[in-house]
Length: 398
Image (cartoon, rainbow, N blue to C red; front, side, top):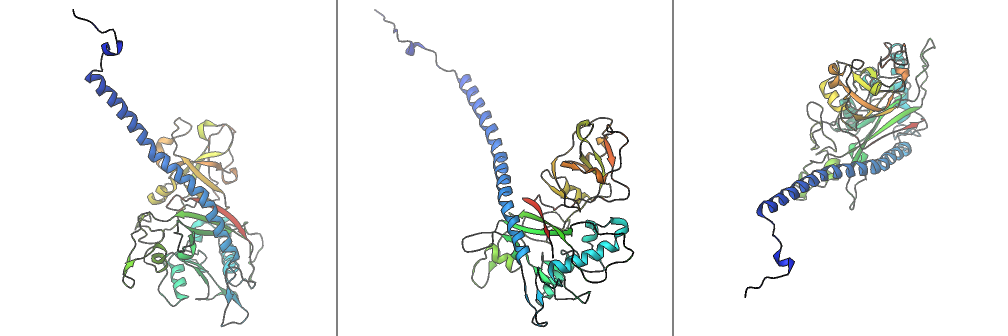
């Protein structure tokens, strides 16, 4: 007699080959989707870490800049050289005096401020008002009777109301590494500073102040991650690969490098990156807002392609000459007759917070969606080629 099993487990149907293949495909698609999320998560974690550590780096830079007392000049007894000297001949005091004279010379067009394009103009008659650039590198090298020091910052020195060559204060890239190199620590960030007058100068007097005087400065600190693609050189003396700190200290590589177009090289080679400062032409209220700040800005056509490329990075920090900091949160995507983005998409960004109305023309109605920058003013926004980890400002009273 033929007996049939009553066990349902033995009598159930198995998966077909098509079902198995379909399950594998679904699983593969899910894994691919999950894998695509990992780079975004890693990037966001790194950005969050950079922000947290960047705050500490900015505080360390501020402490260095405000406590750097200097030393006595052996050629002039009782005369101190440093960033914070009682005489005001060096460091912040000398820099604020040079900036005041520059602001006075440009008072008719800049309304007591100093434009970024003026600050970084190496043909400035006072010399070294901008503490970066080839002139600053040459001056920093001259302090040690050495060739130009790439990436060095230079603070001028004044005596008897005149610029004194080869007597200023230099801060090399190695001095700006965070954390400071040691046997157990490796630098991650490098900081830079850009000075501006804390308040616009009084342009109403009929004559310039002639006695050297110090004025408060507002200093912006940029903290940036060191280039990730640096290849460390070989030390012929020790027959070993140099450490990153030693390579930067000896000028073999830079903490940040830029190519011939001024864009990041990511390998510590080339020149030390310069700043960009495109000029704003028009500001728009985003999403047709009837009131509130102007969150979309449109740069002038004269802005170079490289400055636009730097300024239009999401996460970029833009700084005006009054110390306001704006974050690029997106590229504009609105459409409509009130916002003619079809003509300006490649020169516009969305920022937070919005541009203060003091920079803009008066609008005829609260419903007016755009405003040009005042014809009597230039609104230049400073940025670095790299998106910084952190940007902050602090006051210096020499």
